[in-house]
Image (cartoon, rainbow, N blue to C red; front, side, top):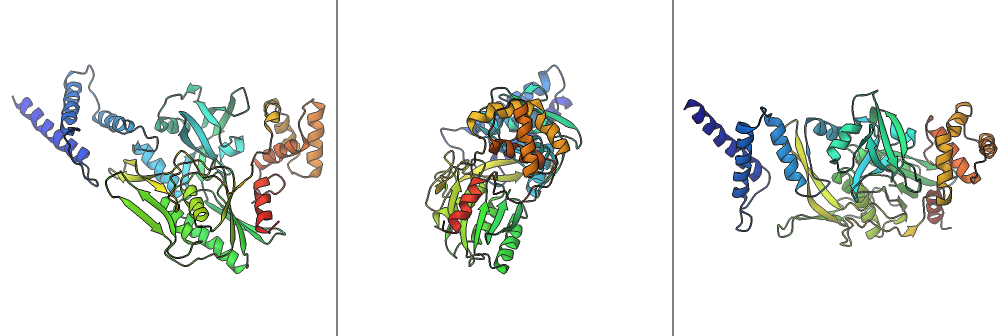
Length: 455
């Protein structure tokens, strides 16, 4: 009898907890005639009770509730809404702060595939040669098809100095590529800048929108102002996004007070519409060209859209990724939380770019190696000739470039001198600090400079 009373009290506590969970702390919930939520809560309670009393083994409450939360979010069919358990929550905060343990790739779900938005500069992934657009098909010999993104991230991440094997499918290459990577602490410094030699043009690269990005951009723009640089290139290529507030604050540096930066709209009928406008006078008044490509996503597209639609700067490059939704972090405790898509955003012209992307004003391909040579490039990489050559030729110059081309011809590899030079430079950069920019192979940056200089 005492046990039944105890169980009844527990079940009442459980129902109270569930009501608190499903009714929410920070959002309001209304029952409607066509969605009798109390019925489903009753189903939930019954299933939990059956598992608690009838399942062959004693269940763990944490596993049951975490699984239930994951299932509920999975029902939204939204790859950007997810439950963050203790490990995921820690990783999420590391990503925003700019430091985490991993291999250094930003991934997303596109057409059911796990796609690399961009490898992080200087990371094990970039050094190994993983590229934006690569599709990850396996981790440690295990297929990841139909696996949740959370589970895939857990497989890739781990302790520092441990190894992980990724299987990758690359466009234009028939056979899968295998990469053995060593996990490391990844620091994502979000901004690099400098003056392009001989051009009197500033170069500002924003790699991610993290906690300190606005401050770092402000420092860069003050530097350009002090040096009287009245033309700059803002490079957003491969920038996967990040914090919405940082993108808004950076847009403010370039726009006139009162100009619209972005509008966010929540669920239809809620009236949750926010229009963000520039609050200050321009910090930088010079001419702008913004470089974008298919790796420019989310917060990158907010900045690009704000500058494009306000006729503040032209976009040059390739169509952007097309992530036009806004996620918010809800902390359930100090250790766990959820990210939930709470709105879609619209550029100042009123366009929703979700799933569509933003077309550049000036289309310039960023492809260096033509499709016709990709198979040969794969053969060169797998033959190890490039890797062996760089061991004794650690500098990229005219002499090493000529020697490498001769080495390829001696092995009967038919490839253009330009592609061969690019392969050599890329391999050498794996083991040395990369220059801020490269005008020899970067057609998009070269064209941007020409446009800014009126050529």
